Length: 365
Image (cartoon, rainbow, N blue to C red; front, side):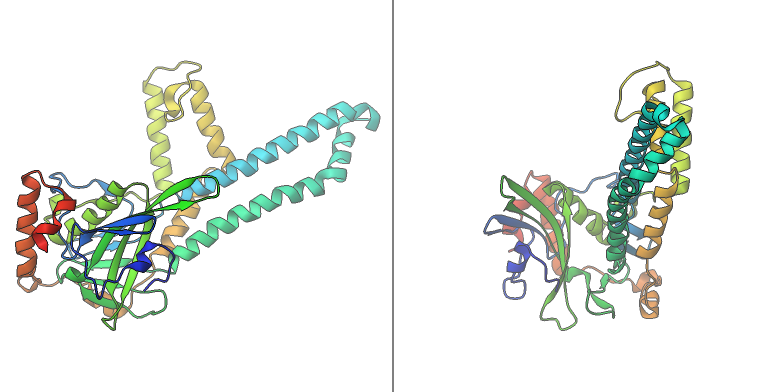
């Protein structure tokens, strides 16, 4: 079981089995359970759940859930933009100083070289510190993510395969034994009280006496609920209700986005100046800012790093998992338990009558 800080450490899942819709209160927080059994947390959305960056791979047999590379390119862009902006400011200071002192040194070039010789090493060292820390963060977060293999959900076998941090061997458990929740707890920063929301799942370990926990922070409670429905709908519903894998961040996606922006600007109105933080095509000024930002970020470098992040995150599975992941004849597909069928029918009728998730517990107790 993941030994991490959080109110989840107080869960006594073995002795106090939760129920879908149950709310458990803890000091400074509470948790709302979605399963077991893996019941819908609301009425099913007819047109699916859109795209999700928690899906690494999805097909008719299995779905891999983990952390995709969305956001990695922006992480690199933010660090490189700040560094390159600092380099531009320092360069401007050197040129301005050389221009002011060119007569004293007998020429602009001599004054510039003197300034670089006297102060260049110190200022360069100062700029190297945030550059080193920034790239250390980029690489360290990717390597940390790569150490945890994705969780694989096999809908045909109705089983789940996971790898805990200490055991390199896979553990395969029945899907209906999955426990899931979203928790919210409050913390004190010294000057303010902040709320933290976490989506979590727990799977029985190889001994059957404890649980391995998977947790990730989410912005709001509804985002945690959506994370659960993305997994549950894949395992329980027809393909039209599934979420889709979000598009990877790579050099191709950057080129496609840039061409779309370029075409939109070409076909739209073109004022000289019109501020818009979200639309680069709003004016010539915005388009200039868009290209300057990407040039300062070293153009496609952030997306090259994002490709590397995606590559190391999708580590190969052992042969036994590859065999377990192969499609099987439809007549051999595992079926939902009778208990789940009854509880799901009751839950769907409950939601159709206007009931909520927090009142579902009474039906499945």
